[in-house]
Image 1 (cartoon, rainbow, N blue to C red):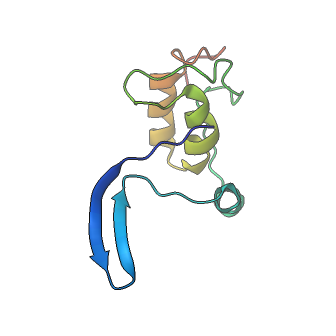
Image 2: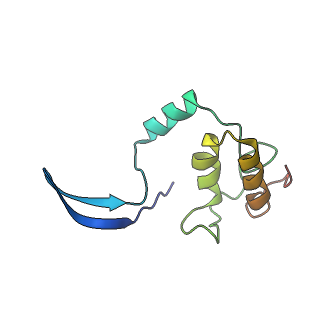
Length: 102
């Protein structure tokens, strides 16, 4: 799993040193797993609920993000049905899902 972040602000003086502002929230995997246990979503990239068969395909509209990232890291947090349908319509075919329509 690759998670990328960018430094969007740097050398900000704080009372205990210097900080850098990053574009992504970074946390240990255990925090994400605990959140998913407490707030499970019912969404996956493939409309049939199966794992994406081509997890390493990089998405042309999302730099450095793959089908596998969306399937294992992003969609488990999606609880809104309309948002899930939008993800499936946009990604199922690209990611090679056997069932490509929600």
